[in-house]
Length: 186
Image (tube, helix red, strand yellow):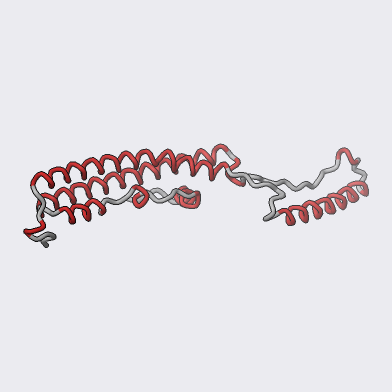
């Protein structure tokens, strides 16, 4: 399908300059893909480092209620220990613990998630770079085939996908899902 009419065709010099610009934009896009890995990984690691205060407004009331119930149950435990002749200093105690990070508190779990996140980002980068290069070839091919005019040249350049379109945000839930999956079957 022809995209241009004879009266709209670009000159050979115009097509040559456009092809150079497509190559340059493709190289910049591939570099942006690689640069985005660090940014995305830092954002992911910040998600892993998140901690939650026991008295945050979302669960402060629940925490106070749990503390009160545990105090009450510990008092009952102390009473039973006294009845059994167990001295206070040797008796077991009940306590509530607040885990500010959940499973991300362990170094091993964080390391595992970061390792998977890095692998996922590298995979996304390879796919993104491949798509950029494929689009570059497609665009230059159309420039050469069609001898397009200036209006069409702009439309072709705008067809280059962005890094954000090719590399979606990395989330903890995606990485956790990937960690839980079995290895790919051939």
